[in-house]
Length: 437
Ligand code: ADP
Ligand code: MG
Image (cartoon, rainbow, N blue to C red; front, side, top):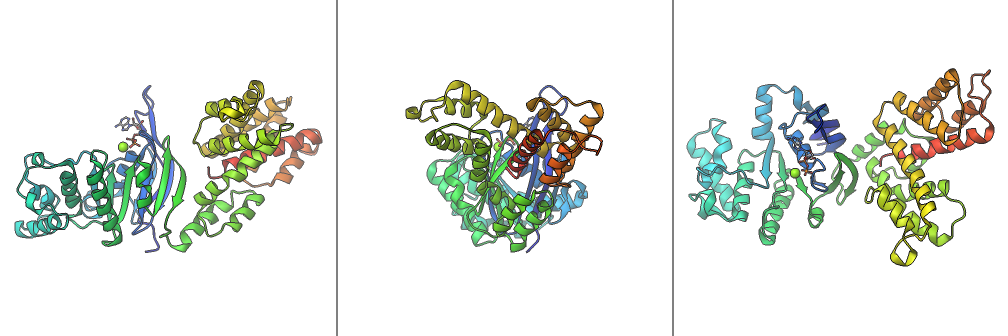
């Protein structure tokens, strides 16, 4: 009960890898799903929802990373274990139903049982029960083409359930249905979760469905961008465990914040921190603006950090006049401000995505440009190594600043105090923005 049913670690799925049409469908996904949870994957078309669902079902092999089902790495399963996963572990429901046109309703439902060598009588008995339950028993002898969309989906749900799997995976199951049938199918999924105690994962791009789930995973561009908990069903330790793992990588300031929110998962805290991040970034970047200009820009900055708008929208919103819903800045300031914010966000993403060594090189170069540092070869390497240590949290912000400040002879970078302080502040803001966004 306390162990996750599904655990995904740094999962990447890249289609057409190395070719000109390469697609990063999943770009480093980490997720745990616990028994009896109802989880929704939500996001725009093409963000990787189906790919994630197929990875969980074992239908899509990872390019990198792992997917565990009941603690077993799916990609290392034997053939028999894989068959077991498909037949008894998971039941899948698709938008396009995938019923077999030449089989009647009852035979379609019982099909997964055929492969398990059960007798015809037993197979049909279970199938009829399910057809009863979902009020389609009168259709038992009809063919799929004779059914309405809603009926077809109830047949395919019956088929998914016939082997009594622990996990139901539904990929936009109501995408093709009228609103009444859609409601009916969503009620069935809810009931399977609440009454039958099945773990359910529903993929949808419809915001009206989100209230059905215990937990909503928001996806964009192959990544999880935030999480919302309607009802906490995970064991208490689940959240803590995440926090403990990540605590080592956090700055001391962040540790204090994490402790203040200790009953929340790291992703929840991440979302809660966005307003704080926006304030910090704002304070870092602005000087002589009016309070009104600052406040409205701050609101747009939050949208940017939530990935609700992109950098270009952000710049336009700053530039737009106040009575048109913008922040009322001038064009030049809007441009330079959004460029600065963009650089900081970009580098926070580099820290998150790249190895610390690669990230350190890129950040050092950024600092050198931003603060016009002229460093020779050896000193440049020193700076990179200090940045790397700060990224890995092996030194804190004060040690970092001291190393920048102290003289070259003493092993430092030999910058003046003011520059050392500016770089260290820039570094901290990048570390903060990086944190779980
Ligand atoms: P969603 O279900 O959120 O709409 P998908 O997981 O289907 O997203 O797709 C994610 C991305 O991967 C999209 O850009 C899609 O075009 C691409 N993609 C999906 N399947 C394939 C495939 N078999 N070959 C190449 N690209 C694919
Ligand atoms: Mg899809």
